[in-house]
Length: 347
Image 1 (cartoon, rainbow, N blue to C red):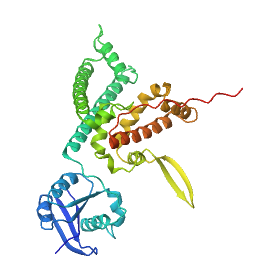
Image 2 (image 1 turned 180 degrees about the vertical axis):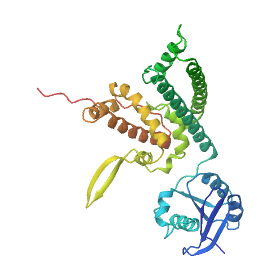
Image 3 (image 1 turned 60 degrees about the vertical axis):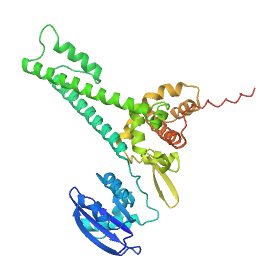
């Protein structure tokens, strides 16, 4: 029996598997544990194995690819329309196999272990930053309840705490004073852990060829460079730079009916973390870029004259995404193009 496509609906422990022939007829339907999938699929060499791009899919995909299978990972939202009638695990596996047979289906590139490790480090750092922000907000609220108003910003909070905790006369009650001191220690510990991650990302960016090229783009530092290289992998997956910008959710959402296109806000698809980091980098680089005598500077000045600052920042991020694709695809270094000369005004 030769299976053309094997669709697998992955679960934490129990997984559903469906094997179909070239005509799409179901020949095999199994329920098995996750750790037996590779051994079962080894009985059908050369088959296409289709999975949803979820937790653990890349790990199993690499193991099956080593056995000679062709791996096709898909976004779950593209599989959902293929589910027939009531949803269950077996029908999900059948829908995965059917979606993988579509000639126009878009597939997710299988990520290496190194890419996933780098993405994991970014997720852990992002969690630590969130913990630090939550801790600082709680400290502000505790002080506000006792009549001490602290402005936003880490530096201003640090100054306010130094004044309150080390004043000649105790300002806070003894127990609250002790509590704030303990929370300040937690804050310092989080700062040290985040700095350790930042140093690791800086070293990784200098060691990776693709990340080093991205560092030449204004607004992209070690964090953005390593995160982009880990997420994108092979830039050849995207046909052009605009496809990468669309993958990051930076292009306008289109609603077209009756041949009349209507563009709305950006789609916000893809990784929220990548989009957030890129927007922060573009916002910090915008003042320098708009003042420069370059093509990007002239474009930004014209854009800011007719659009809101936030819209200009997102437009700059979309341009940065296209630049990222060009550098990773062609192996170049970013060089700012000079501004076009202005035409002389006729007398």
